[in-house]
Each structure stands twice: as structure tokens, then as C-alpha cells.
Length: 237
Image 1 (cartoon, rainbow, N blue to C red):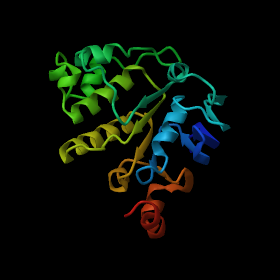
Image 2: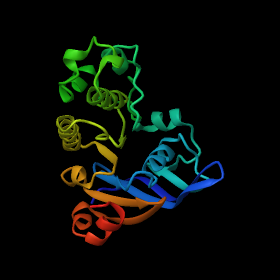
Image 3: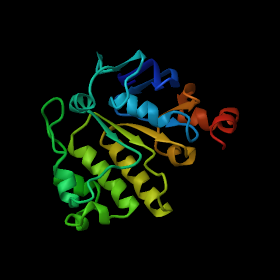
Image 4: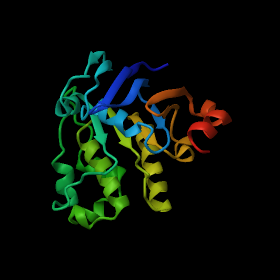
């Protein structure tokens, strides 16, 4: 079994005086896709932002490659090898597709640079004919592809994908699923936050279900799919 590369251990997170994560824990193994599932407002995005350093936990620890990153700034966490693709995409609308990609170029933490423009265009063929188009002129699905491509240009060890299928047309949801599958096949480690269990079934190895800031289930994706009580109570399936 592959080793654990990222651990979230009993993390408590507040927005002001309101607590939103309660002893939240999960671990991510090298090369796997872990689905973080839950209803809207369950705490999925908060968990992702906390791993990425956008939010700082009040207590608990986050360890990446055996080093604590719980108090590190977001740019240092990115430099260490974690790329965050936020729910609202945050592309640069006044830059071209290619400029959006090249602005994110960095070596991986071990100094290697396996992802470059050519490989990103190979992985995301939809972007290649759009390379001179401004980011703000792309559809939602094209912007989603661009944010994933931009994350890859940073040569991450782990990619955090926050609700990548949210609000997209079914054809683009299928393309995002195909992309995640392609990334899995080349050994990318992915944390995928989603409301949609069906979307994750063919993509994830394991799942953590979160409800009201608490992890209420952890197991394989097939174990989750067979657990009607968890699905009905926490996922509205």
C-alpha cells in the first residue's frame, strides 16, 4: 500500500468567532484520488483552504511529507508542492490562456520540471486552440480547464480540486472527469472536493464524508457507495 503524503489531524478552524471545522482529520496516500464529499456548506472548501494555507487552524496539525505546514503561508505551501484549484477559479481575465499558464511555471519541490506548456496542452487539448484568447472570454468549463492547467505548471505533488464540476454543462463535467482520470493514470495525487457522489464513483479511490465540519465517514469509494445510511443522511443520495 502506498504511503501517506498528506495528513490533516484533528484540525479546528474558525471564521471569526464561529467554528466551522471540528477535529477534522483525513490522510492522502501517494498517487491516490481522495474524494472529500458533503452537502453545500458542510466544510469541504474550508478544509481545502486550510490545507492550502488560506486559513490557519486554531488547533490540530497538517503534515505534508512529514513536515508540519499548519502555520505556513500559502505561497510556501505551494512551493512545497501543494497546488490549490479554488472553486471560483480565479484566472487572470485580462491575460491570454498561455500567459495564465506561463505565469505559474515553477519547478517541483525536488527541482524537476515534468510539466511544461507542451505537456499541459497535450493533457488539455481543449486549451491549445485557445492559447491567444483572453481568460475572461472563456466559458466556465474552459476556465476550469485553465485553472487545472495552471496548477500543473507549478509541478505539484498534490493537487486540491475544489468542486471542479460545479455549475458546468454535462459535456464539460464529462471532460473534467476524463482529465482527472488521465491525471490519475500518470500518478498525480488528488484531493477532490465534491457534492456529487456519482461524479466521484469512477474517479476516487477513497472518500471522506464531511458534515457540519466533522468527518463522519472514511473508507473506500465502493464502501461508501454500498452504505445507504451514510449516503441518505449526509449526501442526499
